[in-house]
Length: 149
Image (cartoon, rainbow, N blue to C red; front, side, top):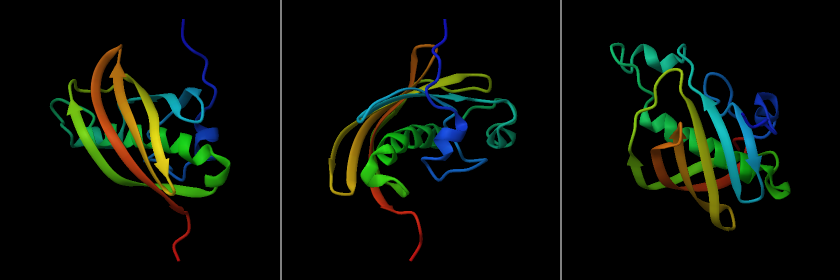
């Protein structure tokens, strides 16, 4: 039995500023003020597989981290005080790559916001496929205005 999403692509794009080909979250399954569970369906036609790597396509690790960050941004930018703003990466710590992600995989992204002080926040994330841990990391973000001055 599959979980029914509470948010699809159009609702996600109403919260975060990312657009094709760089929206790396397809659905949200669960979310509250501090936690999100989301999915990324890794399609065989993703632009990066053409060169990473042609003989053995794997999703680049930095894009798995970006997927986690986008999931966390959905949580942060859903808060009333952050609506219409943007979340920027401020740091990444304790990254561990455990398993590759391949075309056709459905990656489950789980991010928990651990603390926020003013515009700076921290979270812990993991990406799994079929219950197996692929990547874990601590992420730091900064909330800012969406328009360049």
